[in-house]
Image 1 (tube, rainbow, N blue to C red):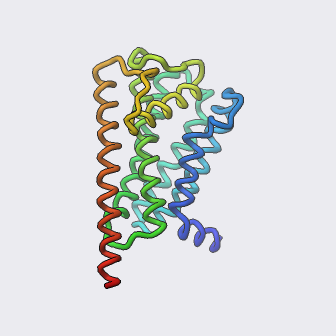
Image 2: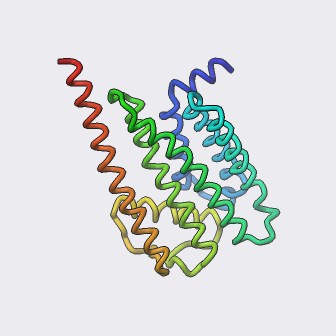
Image 3: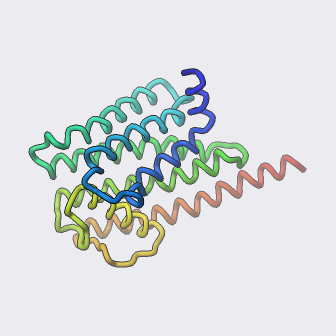
Length: 225
């Protein structure tokens, strides 16, 4: 247990970025999406929950309690899916909780990125975590709108929750990177505005991140002179 705690603390950002990548892009290696909701989704939440422990090891007690509380909820929600009688409402609530969970982790990482210090491997890994967390937040927020109003997006695969989620991962990724192929499009004014907001947020994060990295690198160079 002591070694595990040390490992999670020492490589917290590397572990988290791997967990985020496998959660977002696990569909690349899946040949059957029917197994995603039943097996892969709960397993992904376990991996993400464990991976986020290291980020909060040195945080205050109340932050750790809140992280544990959110983790328990995001872990239990996939288990409760077969029991959900009102599927759209359940998915709206689930997506909102996931937005809160990923937003909480993102805020903690952002505080680390803007704190004084030198550029090192942790900064690089934490920067990547921040970008993937923005995709997570965008993806689940888009799901909130979709499950409340199914006509708010055009071009989604709605054959299963897994297929819809993967489409939103794709849509959020290309929106944040300003690629925009146009195969999936928002159709309501609010989904258009939310998509625009996250596109700007992704560009803003990239610009601010470059500034942070340059300032940390300059501080390191100045101290070496």
